[in-house]
Amino acid sequence: MPVLDHGREIEDRWTDLADDAALPADGGVIVSLDRWRAERDALIARGQPVGVRLKSNQLATELADDLAHLGVVTVEFPKFRDGRAFSAARELRERFGYKGEIRAFGHIIPDQYQFLTRLGVDTVVVPADRVGPAWAHALTEISIAYQPGLQDHGTVSLLRRHLKAEVEG
Image 1 (cartoon, helix red, strand yellow):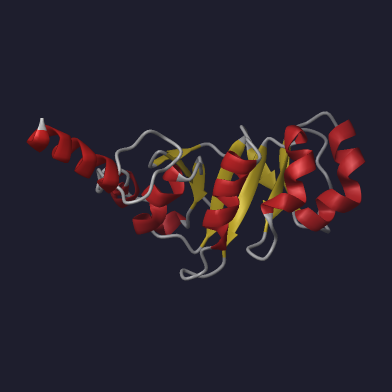
Image 2 (cartoon, one colour):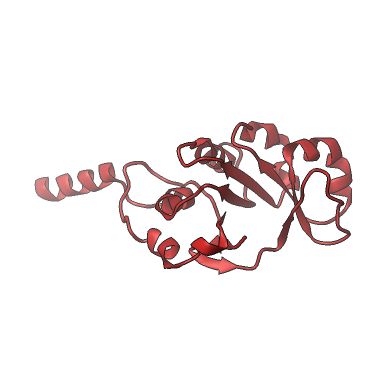
């Protein structure tokens, strides 16, 4: 499936492996949390980039001690209304200071894209038939937010303070 970065399709440099799939000799792989736990030392010793796929019911804290070894953490959105991956992405960035790629996959729609990027998600996996200009447009659709994000975007409360200062000043 295509991978989007800032609304543009990019080449996927990762191979997403099933738990029973053979480990390729070269290249970056993404494995399940269960496989990471079972084969952690061998995956690190392989000397190739490795990432872990978190299901929506798995917490970012389960990877906290291993983040230095991971080039990507993927977070799952199994249903539109399941937002646990939003929390996992934010926790990876803010609480654990993770600097690697965070990738979202599953049931994601363009309306969620800007929120994902505000929380630190770098890339999004989307079905091939859903790639289009709506994804890039979603990043510019809203210029102000209610809550602060990881970047220095303006928030409604900050805008109110600035406007109040201008009126009173």
